[in-house]
Length: 479
Image (cartoon, rainbow, N blue to C red; front, side, top):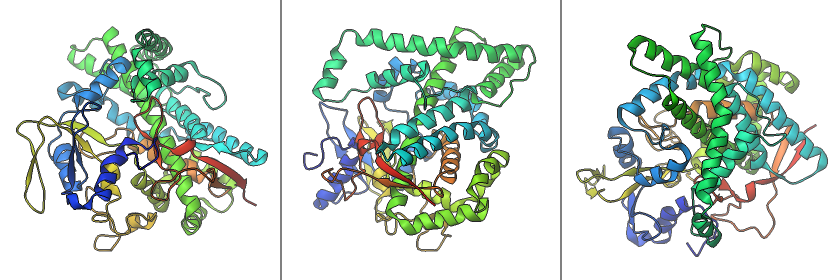
């Protein structure tokens, strides 16, 4: 890793090893001994072998995930739950994350996206270099706030108590080996600060949850079908039908834990994906032209009517297949992170071509999305940004291979919020790309990885990959 920039994200490591040492003849996976920094890793980047432990058999999450999340959610979240408990809560939240329900919330999302658009226009007028990811994070946080609570958090225009506590808590959770981070980990005040952040978030969220409970008990309309209102209704209806589910402090703790994880995942990875969409479009003018042409065809050439069209008819966003391809290509080339599972004594991975079996016991199985999604073996013209591949039919050269695209993972433990993320991204692109040019503005001496100055880095307190320097950009309004 010393050959590369010091802030490069850790998910690059197995792929860099495989590329730098072809003599290893990597058979779609790699055993890596990371002691004493991390548990022994089995990094897997063959799509069919990844499917063996996430889809065909869904192995349990690795214990290191629980140790990271325990101070944050006390493991009361879908990411760390397992067995029947996970199944029940996944069933409670699934309807709220359906395409139909998310689309019904689009008018409120548009209000938050308007603020983001105004921020970009302001940067164009002032000529400033904007940290695009910061602006995007504010927008995606406000959108997830509307989706969950139907509350305007105003994170794009001022500090919000909930968001600030969430940000501070995340920064305290994941510790790197940098000296300042190790000092933070040993700080005797760290446990108190984490407790206080949790207290602030609970005090902020609790009244919203209690209000939804009372609305249900009183038979009142809950207004918009937010994630919280639908989940509360589902949970309480199960209680009424079975008589065995209590609404108590435990219920409140679980719902608060779920909301915290939804907010973390819902703003972080979506903002990063949006940043990479703009970055890749700026580097591929013909692709950008095709994207704009699709928007003209579906939404009309008059961009002043786009906002009202989407708010009134959110299903128009489902008629943008090329836009969906742009988003999927950005996530293919720059996935946020992979999934980690716990190897088992009696569980072996089998190479689909050779039949060779690989033991997993004692290893952290890492589903390396970055590796499989850039592999020439599985992706024709793998390093190119080609949204057209998502329009290719079976039998055509660019047709996407089964199991090879995994930014949201597959199987029963896939990302519950993937439809929300993609609908949100389509809406933001539809409201911006025809009115402005967004160009990367990295310093001339900025380092590059594989020719990309926007390579993914490990931000302090984050486990997902983020664009270098927060994706600095210049924005120009189009005439």
